[in-house]
Image 1 (cartoon, rainbow, N blue to C red):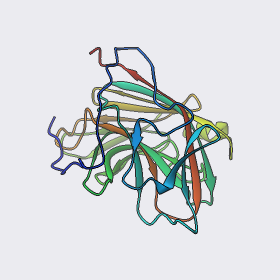
Image 2 (cartoon, rainbow, N blue to C red):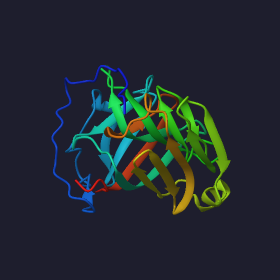
Image 3 (tube, rainbow, N blue to C red):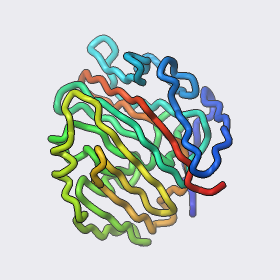
Length: 234
């Protein structure tokens, strides 16, 4: 694997590695504070009703993407489960960064599992933030070939099954699994996207975990019940 040539943010981010045995789930959020998480601009982030909350408002508009980074070190082979809730207009947009890197300005780059309202094709998709852009939309399996071209096929389970399970204004669940060069996403138990990444110079097999608040109109995105399981066997 060749890592992308980005300059990584150091100031303000102290990465502390917590030993995590294979198959030992680790709770990433205490339900009360942002302990173990950090961002260059924390005014967008708070804890409300027992959930990590990202808010863009008229008083504090979000003009560029914001990222709250877990300070537990890099993840490689993993399973992440969480619940999320989105409030806002049709352009409300968020995501979960996995195996990503952080630039000097705090922008996370790399694999992102998108969060949006189901009317947008982003919900349940796998995106490459600041990179190759959309890798797999909802309902797709994508093989990224060594030359960077995409081979796309439909998943056996239609993305519409996931959409029908979505509860607007309520809590919904994600299960994100990364093993080797494969990433899969389940929304409320329904497989929504899969990527097999063979492009060695662009893919990341390890990196940070972060939550995103996308730039745009006023919105609120919340996260809770974040549990990480190490699958690497180390």
